[in-house]
Image 1 (cartoon, rainbow, N blue to C red):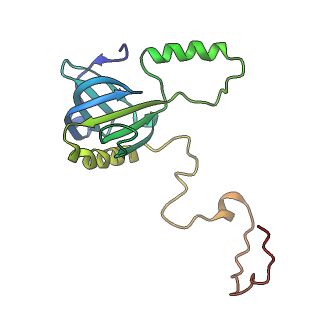
Image 2: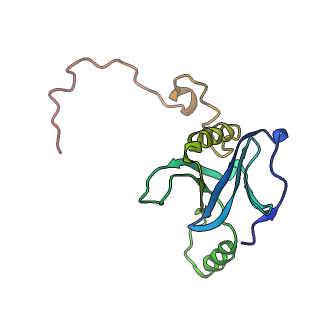
Image 3: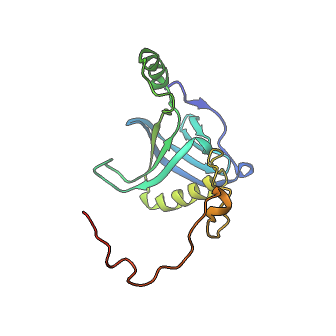
Length: 180
C-alpha cells in the first residue's frame, strides 16, 4: 500500500506508553502484515519488520475500543476508527465523490484499523495507553469540552436560558392523563 512509509519508531522523547510486538494491522478488512504497535503521547504508530509503517495523529482518531465480538472479526483486537482515507482507497473515493452531484459535503472519510496482538492479554494495556494518550489531545471542534470542570453544568450561565428550579412534589403528576 502506498501510504506505508519508512520512519523511526517513537521513543521515550515522544512519550512512548506501550510497545506491542507481534501485532497484526488490518485496514478496512485488508491485512497489512505483522509488526510492532507503538502507542506514544504524540502519535499511534505501526511498523512492520522491514521498517515500513504508518502513524496516526490523535486528533484524527474518532473512536478506539477493545473488540471481543468474534462475529465482527475472528480475533479480539484494538479497534480504531480514523477520520481519513488511506492508500488506493483515497484516490478512488475522490473520483467517486466528484461524479456524484448530490454528495454531502459534511461527510468525513472514515478508515477502520484493527490491531490484533499475538498476545490478547495485552489488549487492556493497549486500550488504557490509548485512552491516556487520546486525553492529551482534546477535540478542537468540541466547544463544550473545555466548559466542563467536574462540576454540574449550569445551563443559564452557558445558554442564557431560564430554568425552573422549583422542586417537584411527590404525587404532583399522578392525575395526569397519559396517552400512549
